[in-house]
Image (cartoon, rainbow, N blue to C red; front, side, top):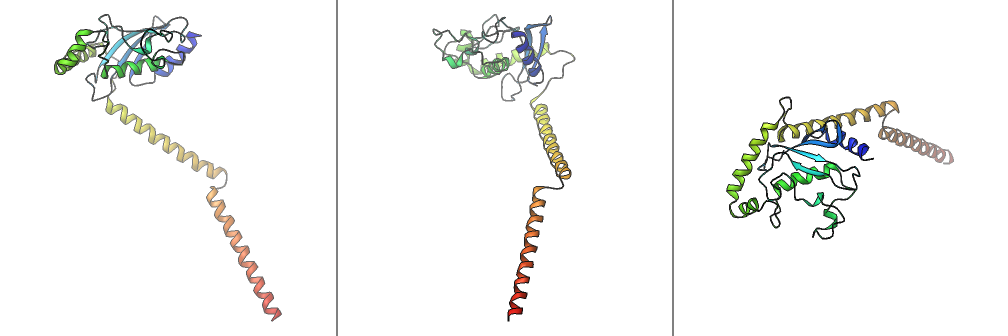
Length: 232
């Protein structure tokens, strides 16, 4: 069951511009993932952050393990690359202090995990940090923290495969606009074809119906006038 679900998710995520994924040794329970930050306002913009996702055999009833291959300087990233994030915690852990809705459930998917990680990068939780030093620096010296993050972002680019075309905010936005225009053109063409196939639009038919009713009404009025003339 887990393998089938994961393969479907893998195929879906392979189409997304913000991640680059592949199976490790053709094992659907172990993925190599790269998160690509497309938000130009983020300190991590343009980064290519590689990680490993390992799934349990009873997925989606238990969460996957997520670990950055190259640890980041971030309050919620442990030195070994693991994350401190609610969505990766077991749903039954009542001692975690987290809301059940924030923790893992079988309704969650890989996409939910990856998007949560991307959100966490820019929205660190400093109240209970996995990296205390990074948390302290973010609070007390945010400028120095930013420089450290920018260094990590630059280092991550060395992991970009030579044959991989790195997306940007502009390229993704442009592609979405093109897809929207294509969809609109396709809809207009299909609508026009339907009108041709069925002999015109409903509006044309309605106009003809009203024209016919108008002709009948005028004819009836004329006959009534003739009858009145004869009686006179």
